[in-house]
Image (cartoon, rainbow over all chains, first blue to last red; front, side, top):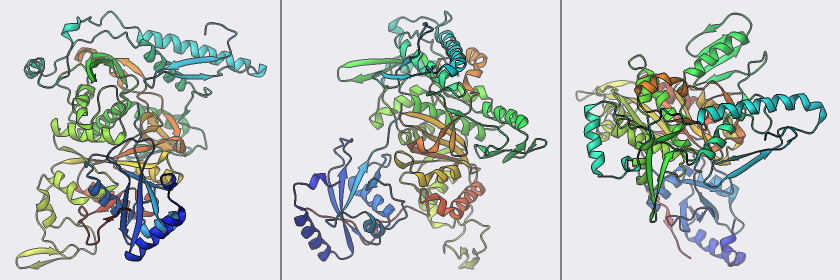
Length: 115
Length: 498
């Protein structure tokens, strides 16, 4: 999961995360990763701070806006190999799936095409 | 294959651009199963014969010279001419063209389909709808079929009866559904890639999601236009060789470039949902609209706007609360009647249109997550259901119901010749009906799925929303109902860099 950040020391990331959380106590630090299978320029690695009381669905809604995705494109976000229910709050998802370094890693995944 | 001693059976199927080799031991070496082997072997030969007969392109098909080919490019003069011709004659058919280039993949596809049809066939076989004494209920587009002793008793929403009668009734109903499959030998579709131009005269191996979309649309339209149209008129809408067909494969491909797709590409259920929405705007069907909702969100104001044909700003100003709710009290204030629920004034509106709602969803990775299996069954048993564009990994299927923990589906992976005119259409209407109800376990179904609902009028819409509200636990937030789109909240997401 944290393959992209292997080069950065876990301790370093922890400190970084703590700094961010101290300056934004009501926010969750999230790192958006690309699905390895997709090679899409739209989905660069991004880092967000999301309000704790946000529902997962609000997060998706804001993400769509920030990524400038057209309304017709599918946007599916997975966390820890799981697709959370849309009415879950971000804080409950964070508690369940947070990385030891304190960040929440989410993954952009594509829909399967069928032939 | 002709060799009697052969115990291995191999089929090359072209479900992908590259050939995929399926091999399986159809006949096992076990002596006790010798009899079974013979039965299967005979069935396989029947299938081969059958498939060869259907794929042998007959002489009735006209041969065309290559310069007469239809070229699917925008602004082409030929198209302009064709448009005029189409106006003069309501249904203008192109002659079919001979298509022998990919006979091999067609052959493989059809053999596979026929093998899957055989009951209890190892490896290939799908489960079939079961009518044993103690089998579970079958649900076909919200109609429940239940085994019981005694006479056949039927209502709109359920049928009860002894196994024999029930089976007959179920098969009758199942055969009434419109089944759309791969077709071959239609006017060529052109696809440009780099410098080379590829020409497709059949959609074998790539068109299945579109076929499933067509199935879903036609079966919904059948319900919508009930009584006022014939089945042949419906099927005219998807004829590949007809110019005026509004929902043909060629029309899907004309708009596919907007989604960065071209003929020969695979499509996802959500993409096909958008194709249908787009095509329904171009080809208006009386009192019928299609609306796709992304991200599992259903916005009531948007549904009302397209159903009443009023601007969305106007809808947002007036009360659209359902009338039958007890907590709704209407009171008068400065000449207007105000609703106590939403604090908006009431106003007259009428639902002019029925609406087909489509929800492209992702319910897991490649396979459906176990917690969603009841959710899917719930949605397929709602009276408003129009089935679902789903499938198993790599192949799309039209999901129409379920039995136990398996989904009932119509399979488009069967190649039939493209039809060249109304006469041919009326004589081969059987090719649009399927008589084998097959089942796929929910846990092996594809997780990309588009749930479809046909909402006839406002009453049906409110019933639909009530059902969703009542079963919130079961739904796991797969469809969330909101009055209108979220406003940007005061708290926002922030970006940060290292």
